[in-house]
Length: 267
Image 1 (cartoon, one colour):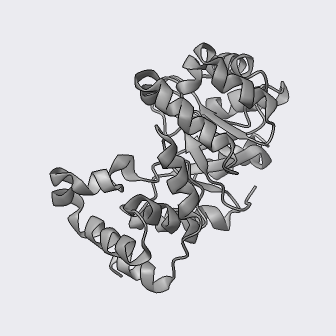
Image 2 (cartoon, rainbow, N blue to C red):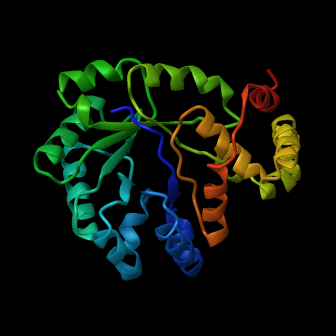
């Protein structure tokens, strides 16, 4: 269960389709970076067309591969079906297979039954949840697969300080916490800072991040990721060029303190 926070990259399906060359170069940089998490999200559905991605994943067992259920109906049968497809694509079981919860179409109980079957058959190695409710823990225990819950993804970043309570509760339960959107969907970047719309809506936080980034000699996104390091939250931001990977590496070198935290969150 709970371990040292992880860091890596994610590959979004839209970027893979619109900029395959940029994503490929970023992926190659990732392979030589020492980062160990690759979050495929639902881009795994398209990876059969990209052998240059699949071959390194099949050969490098040190890469922790995350992927998620695609669609809005994660029934028992659909989980088994997609997990099997994913295993065929990767040539090995996914390290973590995720479901976004809560889901209004399928109960958590049915979802967990699907995970349990996939785990028993060796189709996946562990599972993850995106989103969390207090009653989930009881249902996971009832299915006797708590030790296979690798992490929970929570909407936590520099813009969502109120979710610190959820993060702490999960960590107290010895559950790894992953940021569902480490850079706020691109808001917590230099490009996001330059957006007039973002400056209107998130101006205070962005201005504080900008000030701290200038003091540290870093970018806004690097400061935002280093904040997750401070809270021991794992992250894998989306990439589309090698520079993004280098920024992730630099974020791991930045050391924030309590005063920096008060600056960012205006405490």
